[in-house]
Image (tube, rainbow, N blue to C red; front, side, top):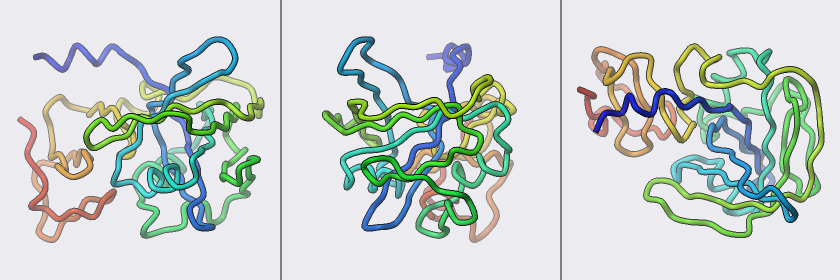
Length: 205
């Protein structure tokens, strides 16, 4: 199987948020898709079970997703795409808005906002596919949406589908799927997403 066949597919980048026990969680995904074109409108999203955002969405039974603008700074993508909600409060320092279900989102750098109530879910191994019915939707800005092609042809760690800068380069975390684009992993290295140690990584070849 030649994985290069997948490289022609482009993906949008979205910021997904949910509230768990009063704490805001959020991550960058590229797995948000509209799956129905008539009411009730439904969207699917896939999240890694090791992510704190997954736990928040599962617990809340809902999520909010914002479509990010091409103007979104790399610092925001790196924060929500590579940092773990177990270690940092990603929303700290930003003006946070809440949807009707109490889920957090950022209006800054967002083109639109879609809030969904979970109506179905499917276990797909390390991930869960959620089907959400749209409860709220609004336009927040104008311009073009951010895609993986815009993001220097690499992929945030929390994204479901990975695209590395160089085919079969680096190390993959066997716990959460994070790709470390390094020749070698240093002693004491931990996955920045799930905190798995170096022994849980396999070299791509």
